Image: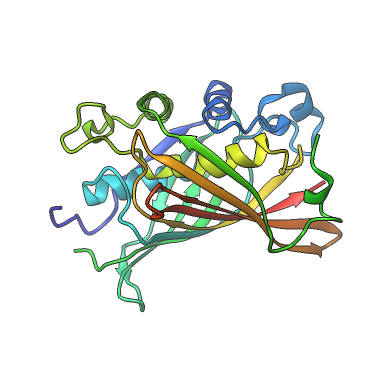
Length: 133
Length: 137
């Protein structure tokens, strides 16, 4: 693993109903709020919404690219909160802070995943198990 | 139909509720990578040293178990995660996921359950531990 850049690269994911339906297929999560357009339209959201894991993808993509590895190092953690759902048509992009030393000896990266309006969809902290950089 | 013992009112807190077993295939990894746009050669069947799955694929194992085993109620809304990632899953791995409901509470008249899904490979190494809180109907 080469020494990474000071900041994470950009990453984003475009949410579509096809992507949501595909994620339902690979995860087995056919919750009607994701895949049933009529159910979604009648719900408090007014439409289907993406699985929570989909707007998380940019942080995985960016961390793996930043580290130059295909999977996160064992012992990596993420704590996060979902602030609002993402819907078909949304583009979710990562807004990551500069990585910093974690008191536990690792590397701490606060991040948010924002929609195209700049609204927080997810806010969280990723911690890598070792100092990086 | 959702198992009554997994509902907000009757959930058995802290006792493992379900155990699921899957053999991860290269086709599974290929499908996940194609869907999400992962194109690193390390995910391909001919990767030197053998392929691995992207870390985020680990999130799907607990979801699959929870839905296929009728634990998650339709309409559940995920509000937060505390996740830990271990060794990468690899095609050919026999993976075991154990699902536990770890907490139940009411806040602002909404019902919440906390679910934990821990996935390990055949040698017992942690692949991922996904703990999420959901608003349930």
